[in-house]
Image (tube, rainbow over all chains, first blue to last red; front, side, top):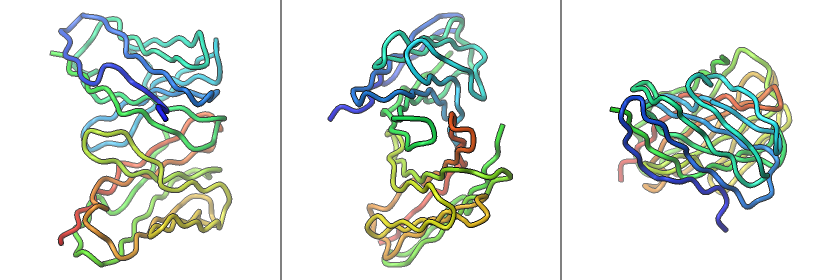
Length: 112
Length: 110
């Protein structure tokens, strides 16, 4: 039962570097999401996708890009890393919108 | 963005005590979810609520979808040390995105 798998678990970036956070799910869920979690805060939605080829912005999309070429994969791209992007990133999926979300174990990212 | 007010922010309780926490919003929600998060892990779903007034249990946990659709409640009965963690509420009214509360940190003293 893999569920939602995120890689890497930890990453340190220098300011201006780029990277891709990987997310894959094996539950054949249509909806996928990227959230960020800052210390003492709830999760904020970055981007979401309702199916392959369809993505849309959430609350905090600036500085990020996504793509959804398959049902299983939903990578998150940081193009020019900034210290404000230091956070823990969670990928999640759900069968349809408005239904329970299943989360991955997170990627802890530090931008120095 | 949508604000969910979750209270209390933290709780320190004796093992065996009951726990209550709640979440309120300014918007009417169609779905409420309750999650538990432990250090270094992703949130794990505890209970999902889909109808106003709904009362759902999962072992010692019971959650309710408020009849105004602007609030939800989570109760934990007879707490044990493994209940330690941060509890989050999440609500959705768009069908596309869930908004999360800022969490209730629970410490259980043996």
